[in-house]
Image (tube, rainbow, N blue to C red):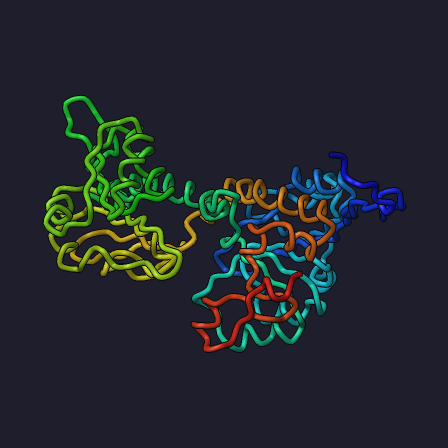
Length: 396
């Protein structure tokens, strides 16, 4: 039986049109890094050429790329404006830098601007956050940005450099000129291979293991995640010893090893997994490279050192505990960082600016710790005793 005719079906209906996202043009300030040991820069001249080709403006402070061997003339040829006055750089609506803005730089920021940089949580205090809040700043932490699979691209990229560097640094420290044992890092015919112990199973640990194996070393990896240890064995395609963090096995490995690398990855403070007593049983002249020192270190004997004075001895074991190892290789690190920052900036503009981008991009949203002066990070809130607001309540 046919359904009865409904006259309303012939009535005109409201047309629904898709709302197009209007692409935005960015004005980006790239300041010179003023932290004593920070030599990297977030954008290379090639990256700036790509941004300028997409109708964005980049103002680079004079000398910003000097430590990474990118000259002002290279930036200028790429289309950037070179500015000697830092005030004019910090007046840009979007500031991109490696180290967090310091107190003097906050004074130069315009209200309601956006800062994309690392967070370096352990150095933040109430006064610092309040200064940013007073200017209604939107602040995004590079190390908190995530990909669609939940990975942290900025952290992973620099962890690759840290892991690879750790082995090169260890090889250097083992030479007699650095008060090491005078042992060559390699598998020489008739000579037992160098023995490496690695704590951790993240990106830095994998790259340290790859580099050590390529140099002919014998590698042992300790971590409490058996699934990660299984992945490492599969990825390395090389027979290696793996174990959970069992003190008896750890001590046995440390007694024999020439180099111990701490590469425990932790989002907050790194747990201490190697006691001072264990270190005391290590061979005289052996080397510890604690990559985890950025978040406290995973050796009980670790103490913060610097690029100027990178080592100290404890129990006749050479300790290298320099935070921010990638800054030792500023050009490589800058290119790596630029490869991450450039797509973020282009995508941000494509989505119509920071507010639209935060609505549409969960990975970018994960990096926000201040939105227009409102604290959105529970971690900072808990650390400083401040109330925070879920960013989803602020962006509709």
